[in-house]
Amino acid sequence: MFIAIDIGGTKTEVALGNKKGEIFQAKVIPAKADFDSFLAPLFSIIGDFSRNKKIKGISIAAPGPLDPQSGTIFSSPNLQWKNVCIKKILEEKFDFPVVLENDANLAGLGESICGAGKDASSIFYLTISTGIGGGFILGKEIYQGASFDAAEIGHTIVLPKGPKCNCGRRGCLEALCSGSAIAKKAKQRVSKNPHSLILKLAGNKKELITAQVVIQAVCQGDRLAREIWEETCYFLGIGIANMINLLNPQMVVIGGGVSRAGAVLFKPLRKIVKQTGWERAVKSCRIVKAKLKNPGIVGALIHISNIKNQISKTQTKNIKTEEVKAKGPRS
Ligand SMILES: [Zn+2]
Image (tube, rainbow, N blue to C red; front, top):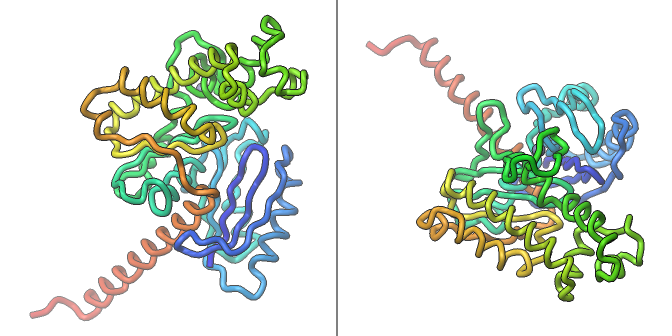
């Protein structure tokens, strides 16, 4: 049995599950900007989950940038944490090994083993919600990259000199197509379009406009909403086509709140990808919606059991080598 923790911008989910990604119990902690006030409820849930059970480890999914080796979360724009060594903190408090990995990488792993990417040997996973995250899963394993920053599609620039991104640069895919970017664009444009359905659906309160409201208005044929949506799909399509050209994956799996738009998103997106991507690579790649409800948690459970297997294999190998050394060479 393992404990998985999925740290998000608005909430943290803690779950008890097994190596297959099956979840038996789950609890939610609302987001806390202050790290210490986040730890108290986390400790209490881990304590509850581990009572009278044999826990083999804790697996954490967190937004990057982070270092899985030292178990440090360097920064988190939505949570205002800086250089938090969460692995060390939890290993000191509890007697379990702790692993940390990027949340989009883990969600991709979850989808690749148990979700939409089950039958594919290479998938690129994208989550489009508050931000945009990515994970490249090759041969059912996470491709981490030289500094654990692989697949950061959200911060690839698709419109130089475009809107400012949370990372400090301009024109990132995240600054143009994330849920918050869609909402921001709609809030800016409704003033000049006071009759837009967007405002009506938000109860005539500009501050209540979200990406989901815009999607609703798109479905009802609102002109402004369609204009915003067309731009969103255009840049998203370019970003995905570039990534398909680069990695030639069998499948692109899209998750996160914005993916719930369904055909309204996927139909125009596939069209733009076809228009802008490399023909052979695009033809061999399916763009599909994610299937799992908690891909980060599922991926975290599978990831820690994979790591434990690798460690025990290495240990068995070392023991065998030691035995051979002790017996000496055969004559
Ligand atoms: Zn950026």
